[in-house]
Image 1 (tube, helix red, strand yellow):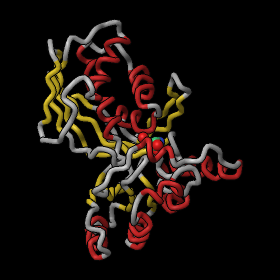
Image 2 (cartoon, protein in one colour):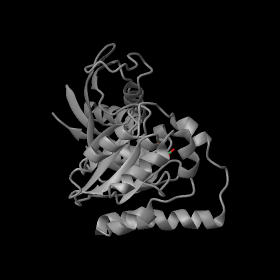
Image 3 (tube, rainbow, N blue to C red):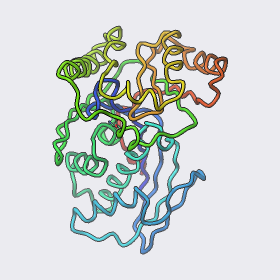
Amino acid sequence: MIKLQIPATSANLGAGFDALGLALQFYNDVEMEESDCIDITSADGTPIPTDEHNLIYISAKDLYEVCGKKLPGLKLVQTNRIPFTRGLGSSSACIVAGLVGANHLLGDPLGTDDLVDLAAQIEGHPDNTAPALLGGIVTAVFDGRRVHWVKQEVFTKLRFVAMIPDFELKTEKARACLPQQVTHRDAVYNLSRAALFSASLLTGKFENLRTAVHDKLHQPYRMALIPHAREVFDIAYAHGAYAVYISGAGPTIMAIADEENTYFAGKMRFSLDNAGLTGWAVHDLKIDNVGAADRR
Ligand code: HSE
């Protein structure tokens, strides 16, 4: 039985739309072995597809096909902690679990670059899949076939505090609201900030992060799809966050706070509650530098 741990991810990081993402110490567990039928169970009771529509199964089958093999069937036991459709990379975690698990089952015929490419081809963009696989902060360019990527480990003592609402926002809906075209000025606005984000995170210039997460490509449009988002941003900044941004396609809002801001998450819970925003769960997370890991 192969046992995997796959991290949640936070994509875009403000201005790095479809290009930047990082992994978080918040995991799904997957156990997998070949079988002569599809036998899928949820260890924690989360409702999941238990047939051929299961994304882990689909991804494992894809990898077998790429390797010229047919997957006879699969036994899967999933423990899902990453909530679905909340902007924390739950579908990427499934894709990466399927690919890494299937690759192990076949004796690891594909290398890391192949897995990064295949994951992005299935998902459509690499900013969640690549960090789920690799860990750390990943800068990625997807040319439609290949991903050109750099993974960097992050040793800063920052907290990534996820404010996760009790409603879902499907990525298709969050992408459908985006404009078809942007101005040259807005393109420059974003690319300069995306570059500033990773350089500032990695060198400890955290005072830049608030500027770096501003963007003109997606967050202004997505804010309207997330009720009370503005209030959550304002509360997080009032409690000393370095930066606040919409995680992935939303609706989770992520605040970056200093490790020494010890009570940040507790203060967020208290203030959200006082503001009547009771449906928001607050998770105090750190960056994962490992990515999809084998727990055999
Ligand atoms: N970059 C993607 C988006 C992440 O913002 O739509 C969601 O998968």
